[in-house]
Image: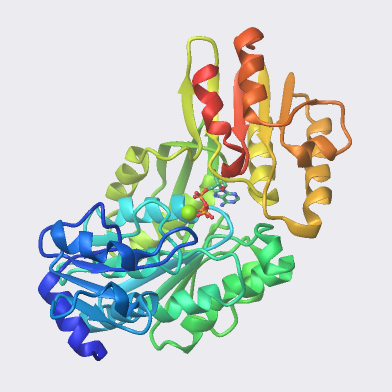
Length: 432
Ligand code: ATP
Ligand code: MG
């Protein structure tokens, strides 16, 4: 079946699902494969429980004579092609977001701001890969006037690939830093891969790039683009300065030199969210959202999913950032915590994963930085931190941390909890 015929089926169904446990009536099932599952095997169940059609790529899973099975060469490719076709048919303006850190937060802030006066579609949670991006695009409806799409990468070429699916009209790279070095090979590899978004936009007529003017790495690779900068210099389109950080980010901002000054107290932890917020303001103004409404959206946004959340237990105050960690975000979180004016600071840090050959050196750098600070308690979890040179307490895994908390719980501390998701530091939260 050719793409336009498949697209007709998609239009009839309106909704795509790749999860046979969630098959809304009349939806289109696409059978994806993972390391430990084969979606083809669930096509029958999907049809039984509500799907109108099932796209499969292994003929033996079709029932002979049942027209609801549609055989294609490769289901994943079909999902991606349908998404791009749909995006083109609707012609909605797409804002693409990538970067090493802050993609999801920036995406959420931009979406909160734009929602004040637009009907927008945006990536749910962190669905930013070769499946999440097309799945998000397939949720686009004619009534959406903008789409905000998060694009993640851990290998070269991935952002090019995702850009060719989403075909953004506007783009933003939040920052470039050290993460997934295993996949990228080097920091240069990271810059080049994130820069694939700029490469795409450079070729697209009428495109716009929002850029953090203070970021030299980004400014370096931004030649030939239509740039809208934001930053701290006051002749820029949007600029601002941090006015408070204990613990919530508070700042003031204005548009250009002459703009009216706005103050905002966010519900975000971390000075590193300042550029993320400036990006959202810039994009809001660009798309015609009133400044006062932008401010309301920033003040009202509460982060979800363990991204810099504040939690008070009976005994302690926790700053939970246990969802991901890499050298750049770890350093940003530590610097922010160091500057925070709160008494009795404690760290619970987990290993940063996927750093390949640079892992030992990067863990050592973090350990050395912590030595310079005067945190009252430091607990490190994981083999990489254990192998670094320092005299802090180490734990092989979170089970050991929880054991310690059961007998010897610290009390009266503000505790920064940060590590790669795989270390599972979030499971310690209820024990503090
Ligand atoms: P992922 O790669 O998991 O999708 P992400 O890029 O979407 O991550 P967020 O989830 O928004 O990033 O934030 C993750 C963490 O990155 C934050 O909790 C914080 O520690 C750090 N971070 C966020 N914004 C910045 C920034 N502008 N600069 C440096 N670090 C940041
Ligand atoms: Mg994300």
